[in-house]
Image 1 (tube, rainbow, N blue to C red):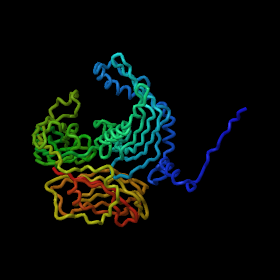
Image 2: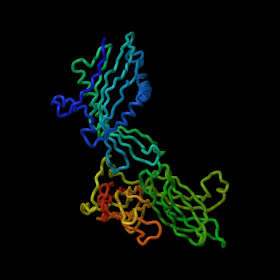
Image 3: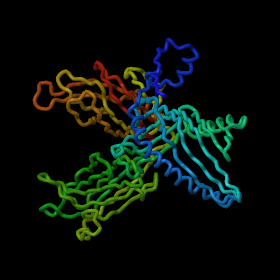
Image 4: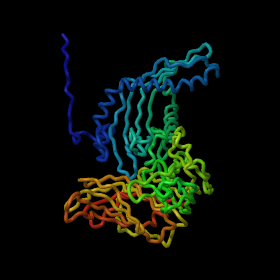
Length: 517
């Protein structure tokens, strides 16, 4: 009678192993054990194991749909009658992730590095009918080792909260497999195995080895909100005059002024001066507006009658799409004022006067590369470090875009309701206040248009806290930083975390971009 014997696994300490056994074992130790920068992801491997039967079918179905048009190109050529998958499955063994590393980045992106190992048992068999001969090719014993870096960017306030996926390999992948032709393993042919290995590494590396990237768009550009689009130019608006406006006041006159803004922006509209008791006012006033998408944005003109008491009466409005403008070319428009933008509204047939404006769209110069790599600017920089280099100044007018991303470890003595102040040339702008937090996230952008940037000119940024309700200490400074604009002008863009002066551990994250017109 045979008796089944179950052997217990032998557990031994590493120091008990000889050098050869230890050397063989090291290659199988997960990366999170050897490198503390990597984290273990057992939960993700468990998830992949449970989902693998369904992922296998979905991936194989995708492979068939992608391969079908490629195969169709060869039918009829080289005496090939047909090419078909006799079997297509990735097997029962899913890939495993032996470690994951998340990089800290100042950019609006998430950078993840994975270590992927797959010793699979796929069954992929391709049958070629060549004249009267049937050729069977089978892929077996597939093994893959790869270290992909996956970047989700940019992060946006629209589901799934990132606009695209960027993939690159941090080292050449190791790929090993068997290839059977007519029942024999052709990889056993002397020299062929090494040739195939080197060819795969070279070709895959040429396409995807860092800094080469493979981009997968997730959100269409039209789906992205205007708030995440970067400025591309400046619209110069000259409000010249208006004629034959409506009489709104009791004595048969109006006190008109014009509000100027762009669609898709949450910034307050810019206003002309008020012309008292005038139905044919002349302003000749100029404004500059930041443009983010000249193909979809439009200029909005709203004419109001100023009233000392109560709301101001609307005299009319008009919209000018920016796509009608040619870059650097001034164009004058004489526009009939309407009640609204509804073409079917019968009230738009009523005469409300006209407004005359001159528009010029000036795109930013593209001579400076303002893009940083995915891991640029990951370190914190001391705000007191000197950055001036020589006596450089900006060569002409431009726009300074200041984005206050957030702060860390800011702490007040009596309250923590932080907001940020941005001061430049006497102009003050501030973020919204966030209640009861030491790590606020604002992500608010401010714009400053200048004729030139002077040597050693600075932007002052201060984090404040404000108590709601009555208090003897209503406001409190949590720290400040003065940022030299020389680096911004010379490099086009900075994106750094600065230690706050007069703060124990406070850090503020600031992005500044300079665009010349």
